Length: 188
Image (cartoon, rainbow, N blue to C red):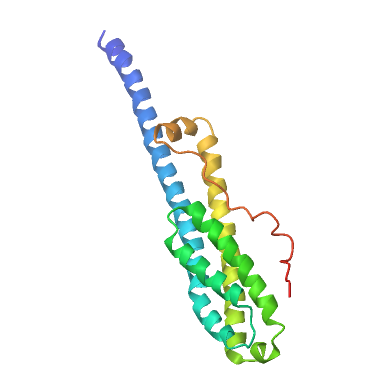
């Protein structure tokens, strides 16, 4: 009789213990994936900040060019301030996309000022911006990879049960803005 009682209690207890261990392991792995995704986004923002920090130097270098398009300089300065005060990730991404467009336009316009593009300071800033843009692209790719891993994991059964209980939902991918495949139009 003792063996039957022990067996009757032991098996359900072992099943409950296994489920609890699975739940804890799944919970912890979801937390790690979420943190990895957040870290990857922070790396994207670090590169955006680096780009934004280069803007004052670029604007000051370009200001010296006679007749340089003042509205472009004002717009890029405004966007820099807007990025720094953006409260949400989506607002920062949108502003970063606008900065990218204006910076491209600024560099294209600068090509019409040989005395400007010939300066070492401008060339160094242009190289630094190109380097930063490459880093932004790399970090965006890493972020999207982390998002893919996270989203796939929270959609997989039975992990989706735990994910729903702790309030995890799909994270958005970083997507290129519409028209990113086209070169910016420059009007003189």
